[in-house]
Image 1 (tube, chains in turn green, red):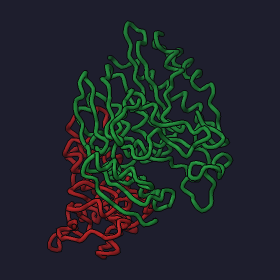
Image 2 (cartoon, chains in turn green, cyan; image 1 turned 135 degrees about the vertical axis):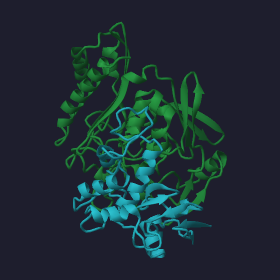
Image 3 (cartoon, chains in turn purple, green; image 1 turned 180 degrees about the vertical axis):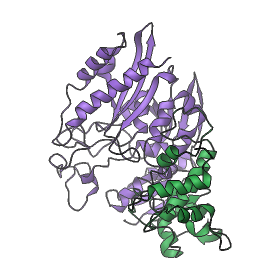
Image 4 (cartoon, one colour; image 1 turned 120 degrees about the horizontal axis):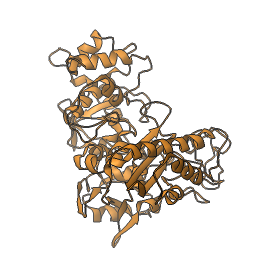
Amino acid sequence: MNPFDYVRASNTVSAIMLGSEPETKFLGGGTNLVDLMRQTVERPSKLVDVTGLGAFIKESGNGGVIIGGATKNSAVAGSQIIRERYPMLSRAILSGASAQIRNLATVAGNMLQRTRCAYFYDTVGSRCNKRELGLGCDALEGFNRNHAILGASAACVATHPSDMCVALAALDAEVHIARSGGTRTLPFTDLHQLPGTNPHIDTQIEAGELITAIQLPMLHTASRSTYRKVRDRASYAFALVSVAAVLQIEDERIVDVRLALGGVAHKPWRATKAEAMLKGRAATTDAFCMAVEEELTDATPLRENHFKIALTKRTIVSVLVELARRSA
Amino acid sequence: MSLMVNGAAVPLPEDPRVSLLDLLRERMHLHGTKKGCDQGACGACTVLVDGERIISCLALAVQFEGRQITTVDGLATGGVLHPLQAAFIEHDGFQCGYCTPGQICSAIGMVSEIHRGMPSNVTEDLAKSDMKVTREEVSERMSGNLCRCGAYNGIVDAILATYGEIGE
């Protein structure tokens, strides 16, 4: 690991001032950043520890909830208010990593974690455009079973590893950002980017900007929402495919449906095509099947991950059928 | 500028690159806590911080000023094993023993989570708060601790024998 300076921020203003300096990164629990620094994928010369700032979960009015960026993943998953009002968020977090990691990891750090593509990590033997733009991508013709089937590019086929973020995408969350001279907000679904020709940039967050909180609007149908994760072993593994879903039915018609997918794209994938097809229709298995066919029309498999297309379709349909059967 | 390890004050390292794990093993020579993967994938380095379990390999020691760290070395009192340590022996909860310190610290943290009403991914109703120490819950909650010898049945038996409720 390269040498670096460590400083603990005492408040948001000083964190942003310190964080705006070149080659500086904010440090949360460190469960991803420290690993990346050890592999020299990340080489900051200074870390600004923000774990002492903004750990809270509170009402934000209109039935919504706001969660501080430094809140531990386990604190969110275990919070009674989150378990009752946003059970899919709790379940998404509980399905990710291990308890020991969730006790360290922060909410903002979870959002900003980087892909676990093995070629991204292999600084010695592999080419990776995300690590260094212009090198090329060894995943395209390599071991790509875990890689993207939606929204990838010739430059990068990596997936976003978070479970929590998939639930946040389906919940229409909003990201609160502090920066020099003020604040801004961003719809959560705009936070992460598709790779295009700039896969080295994961998010819209600019240098010196700090995620201070995530705001969740009121969820009207907590009972008809869930998160399901499909993986190679029953626990402690990244998703092959995951689905966060909300289904609101009135008079047997779908009045609201929100679907987000994990494990299939460079960002949590909001299935807007399927949602558009389902709104206003009867909640039948046939309708669900047609909607997923539409959503996956443009899916492009790599040599080893063709199975993800069928798996994604089956998982979405299965989740929607389950939610439709539940009483509201 | 110190942290507490098994009740003793330890100065924070001057080099912020030092992980909590390396502080314990290389500087304090507390070799109970093991370095397995050193990348957060195996759980062998699990320790308790203020009673909560964390992996110590990806944790920078400088972040733990003033915190109480408990390692496997600090569990026995007056030469008497912690009840869970004794149960691991009784139930063959290990073969090579390399993952054992992490398993034991993790299980102690896990039981405290269950008693606080923390749900897991196999908890069906997330809204309920009375959690039980069952085989299914223990298996899920301990998934962050790998055992290459495959002593999982013995590990779960030892945990259930120590903390499980009769009839489960």
